[in-house]
Length: 123
Image (cartoon, rainbow, N blue to C red; front, side, top):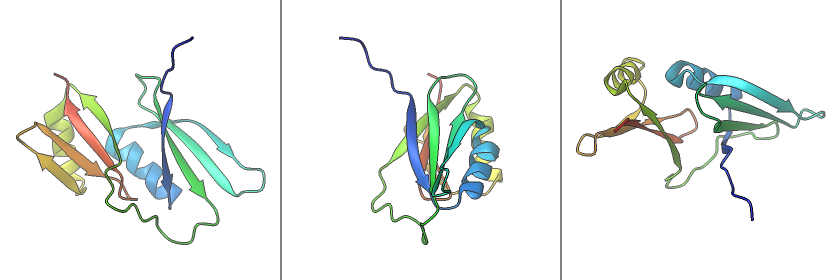
């Protein structure tokens, strides 16, 4: 049997433009490709970090009228960086909602829909 490879993580977003702005400004992710339904009912945008093959898929649904309720929201993905202190300072300067765990040497950034991105130094 062949091996499996994780290719993307999906977050369903309420305001696609707001989410795209967040991920491009806060993390420098770039749009790799998008798929738009012929009837306009949805848009899928795939973002990449320029160094790995794993993508973040943002799904926008036309008929959604209110933000998503993420409940207790333990959903997140993680990024690593060899420039942890500068990214941390950048996210603070942007006024983003951060949850910091100094004892573990990491922090989380909240996106416009309430999803969390864990930021870890390369160890």
